Length: 440
Image (cartoon, rainbow, N blue to C red):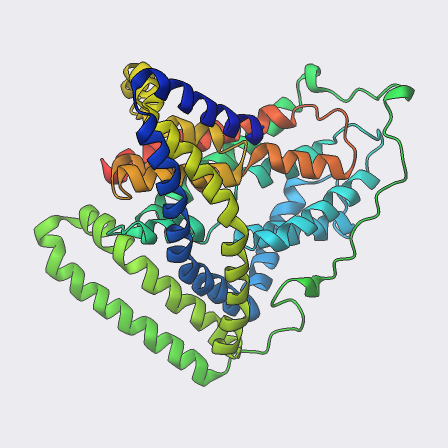
């Protein structure tokens, strides 16, 4: 799909430029966009290293274990047809825990293992079960509690005055997408149209049963050894630090709230400027409580950040060049002019629609569109803030479905795609609503 989108952007750009007389602008934009992409990669690499390192510190300190314990009773209720001691339940718990902490690379193998184990409980091979559908609906709705590191680092690289301002709006948007995806999945499963229909003998998946990958819990940081109890002196340090912060926050509120009001203070001061330092301190303290060598763990986790930056560089160059040419040719102006009278009535700038349409199709493509939007519109413009929030509201739905359903050779996905797309739509609507509330 992304191949056709990229090809279409390039060919339409050149064709439109031939009629608008902007061929020189298109030529200049192609080279300038490639240069901007590399500068952007350099700008976000440092942040990727820092935050993936901090996540490693917290995971080693026991944060991952805490998330796993919290998820276990919830998943027992969501997946009553999966026995509690079945390997599928353990794999799903580890997959969700890794996703919540933003450990995407570690989450995918556990997700594949979960699908393979769920398929062993499947009485109709090749047909998706209700448990598979719900598992994928949750995965595509992007249940991430940590800040969207890549998005925030692009905002830093584009000189945003408040790069972390989109963290709370993103949490709200992904909450909307998750809730709607889950409810849609449960509701659609009851419809006769999406009932289980055993495949005909000729439609049965062929070939040997896929063996689940061997993924012990130690594959994730912080799961190798049981945590040591927190010492009294460690509690004293943590509580003393917390008390100091509480006193400082109270002093700031006493000084500023009478002048600006409580909500503007929380929205403009706390969510924009306090969240990042509090996050860094919180992750470090989790590692400190778990007796983790904080600096060493930070360096080890940061190595992955460098690998991620190198991996996304070609994708970012390709997308930014295509979007830059499309904008320079005047084609984007024509598209916006045609759509804006309709979308502006519901509070959606037409410039944000390409991001919303591409997000379910391609993660790298959507990332590139977001980066180009922040460069052209400004990271702190409403369009820039909305695009940043949409980026974290859902996952790349079609990619996730292709990988996970392909792993177990599902021919009949039943209600999975409609439920996931409903979650995508809810994430976009939630992003628009919360951005209007936060940013006006």
